[in-house]
Image (cartoon, rainbow, N blue to C red):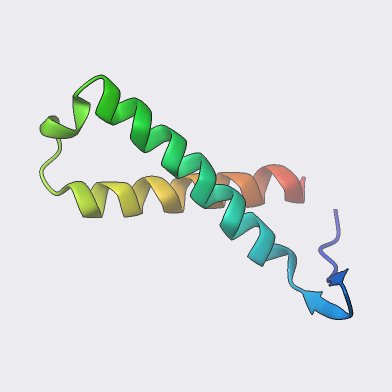
Length: 67
């Protein structure tokens, strides 16, 4: 797939911007699942862990869509 700009009311938006927002929502859902089961107590640095999960989700989405 070729990544092209998306026209939103006359403003061209890069497709990565939409993927960043979608990955953020997926990460929020995963964070709620982790907090619900109490798994956040097992990580050494919760903020670094959340950032790593976000990067993994974003890169996975980009790889899946780029196929």
